[in-house]
Image (cartoon, rainbow, N blue to C red; front, side):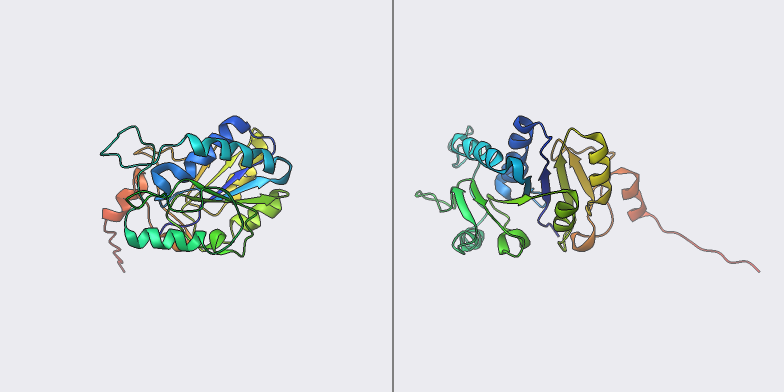
Length: 224
């Protein structure tokens, strides 16, 4: 019911905000989120710069048990089973490991923030939900290219884009196949805003006026 949320950084984005935002869009809650922005599409003209920025953040993140030290930014993955699944993705040889890529040498189910570059759309990392601290970074060339690739997924819970071009924002947000689209941010919510997915990411909506319909019964009366 989650997915592979597409997060898109265009070449006119505020890169300081976009890089930090894209990092935490995926690694918040250790990637164990149904709305994790785990497919990061970056315009080819800024691809290396964004990768360098992401890689610079990763070593500053503290990983460890929160009960021992609340200052840790990220904890473990949820179970041994999930750890094995995450490591299975990392041991598949797909893409190029920029940071992380292996289990931490310590007790517990800990994996550091892992960034994989040069991912292609046919790889498992681009198609399947990892549900762990793994970010796949894919280059793109233009709007039509990235829209077709972002939407080429059975999932559609969330998506996002980073751009300072208002016209572009309106075009892309309208065409992204997702129940929620974040622009120059990620994860913002409100009790009045409906939340839910399209395609295999579910039916119906939580929160907002739309959620009330889930608790209503409509009667149809025909009179001749």
